[in-house]
Length: 484
Ligand code: ADP
Image (cartoon, rainbow, N blue to C red):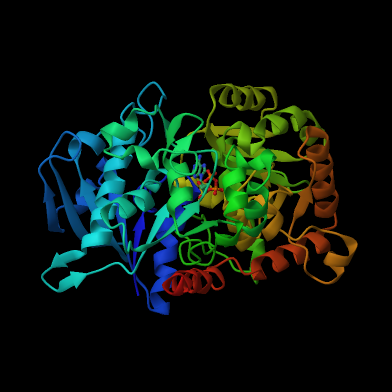
């Protein structure tokens, strides 16, 4: 079975969030099940080095204003199709934002081009020395690939290749001025309420949700939430109408990359049989975050985009409570300027107790998982969330809002779940400062009972967080489209 993935990021090459981790992990999980996945990605500067050894499969004289090439290359165990279009992708800084922190003003062209080339491959196949590779299925991820199902229908109206659209976060929709449809060459009859139109705008994700054969999102709870006005962000009506085609397939993690026994970013490796070793990782965190060495109260960590979605304004509100509880906090993140400022000030106000590092640091994110006691994820909504899964794998117990994938992956500590050796963390609701403060108190109380905390760590590290269940579910979903 051949599958074409279309996405705007992929770990370990280029990453701004969980999407990249998933795109880098799913193909590896599908391969042993017999799927040959090729990932179409823009050749951003971070991928340029891989162009050298690749094979040029196709040339484009004019792809929205410049020449472009499609290069096939193997890297890090993945089969990549890199769209080398320097006029669109060869830019410094963020892959989505310009130096002022605004969306690049030609994002519709940048990701319209990606979708157009995807449709080209999907409908025409790829010919190289070894023969022709044809995609049996196309899997478009998030709004940047949202036009793929529509363009495929344009290219082959009679028997278009079957297409899955996955929503990794519905907050990002790719809505543009309606005139974009003409620039992208989309005929008017696709620009309807049932099609690509979103409140008068041209919507990339809207188009994907309207024209894909199947829609998935990244957890069962988020799939249900998306059909409600509180979470659907204007797409709930469409998703309700398509509920028969919508499923929530829980994300997993790459358990080779995220393995405390072998992780090269830790000060010391450990397993569930050598948990005492974690103290060395904790000491390394204390050094990096200028925290006092303490063992009598938990060290919480946060590894996150700093945005309202992630509920970190609530954490700022309850910091005095966290500090009074004797706990410590190490926060790694970047995003909204007011939150960055708030956490910087908190570190100044509580030296030795609160440590803040503003920025993006993959290696440090591993260390935080390897030495903290608990990870805080107080999101207002969370499609799946990956940091709590890494936390489980590393024995860093998640303290999470009961929403989306957080609700699906953390087993809340109750007297029963503790007794049955199932408890892996703490859930709270509603997502308010008061409820978060109570969750922090509960964590501190459980931590104080060393035996209970240790047994929860062991439960967490045993919990299945890989792709064992979801990879076959994707395969079954692809196969189900053959008959439809
Ligand atoms: P989202 O995709 O909404 O940002 P997820 O929890 O699904 O949230 O995925 C976030 C990913 O990005 C995780 O792999 C997390 O470790 C990583 N991450 C987030 N912020 C940082 C940061 N400042 N430094 C390093 N890694 C980060």
